Amino acid sequence: MKNNRKHLAIVAVLVAIGTVLTYYLLNAVYQFPVAASQEAVQIEPLFKFHFMVISFLFALIMVFLLYAAFVFRRQPDDEEDAPHIHGNVALEIAWTVVPLVFVIALGVWATIILAEVTEANEDEMPVKVIGRQWSWVFSYPEYPDVGLTTDLVLPVGRQVRLEMESDDVIHSFWVPEFRVKQDLLPHTETILRFEPILEGDYKVRCAEICGFDHTNMVSSVLIVSRAEFDQWIADQSVSVADLSPEDRGEKWATDFGCVACHSSNGSDLAGPTWLGILGSEEALIGGELVTVDELYLRKSILDPGVQIVDGYQDIMSKDFEERFLAKQAELAEMGVEVDIIEDLIGYISSLQQ
Ligand code: CUA
Image 1 (tube, rainbow, N blue to C red):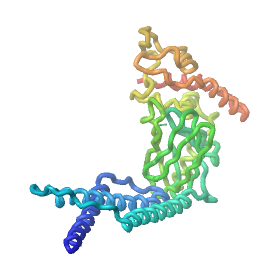
Image 2 (image 1 turned 90 degrees about the horizontal axis):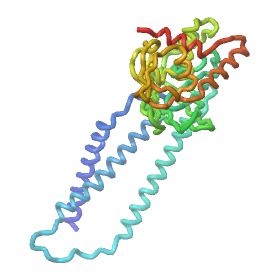
Image 3 (image 1 turned 90 degrees about the vertical axis):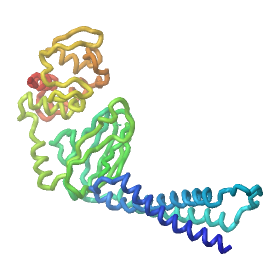
């Protein structure tokens, strides 16, 4: 009996040391990004506490296992059977009831925090989010003149309500610094709320495997001061009628998500760069050579699966004509006549080295 106490005392000390070491190791390996939202501040204690519990359980199991394996190993001259044990009712009740109560308590705690971080706020700013293979598009119902943007710009200190939907498959909106995450579904709106509290340049990453270019489904999330946000809104709200055709083309390239796959600076994305593409000679899949002229650009936008440049894949969506016509009809109702394809070709043609 006295010996048992001694063993338990040693094990207890080893478990305590093991818990502390594992906790520090976990924190060193899984370094958290900065907490940039109010929700992150609320969720952080839950993470920390789980790390502590995980560390304790890991130490508990490993110490008992290794201690028994080394200290109670069979002696060379010991040929006896081990004593027969029929179980221990008190121990079994304890290791059922204690974790049960513990897990329920954690569940209650997590539910309270979940209710807090998903709570609506009267002053929250709605932002529409569309996820599609493979880019993000945002719009601001409070500021209809802004149109669509590919970066998410938000003022610090005001809760936002993202109203999200997918154009195709399931995507997931995830900014690690905000500690909240929500899937985007086709035909169903999902909501995500958070309040940015730290100015900075973050990234939203798609956190749901969604096909070929899933890893590049990344957009900037800029958290700026209220004054900078107001300035940004004013800058974005220039009417398309006041722009030159080339500048309009640049705007369409962003609004319709072209820039997710086509760069304007020569860097290679999922599609060919637009820099210097007009007049260049390209080899198509199948070996045919074409000289890129305005006709080829037009065909490649309207019917992108037909003449694909060798080295690229047939991944461009085929509905751009439809979407351009819908946008043109919408603008025509406001008295603005534009030809989006002409604007785009004008913009692409202007991108010469
Ligand atoms: Cu969208 Cu992964």
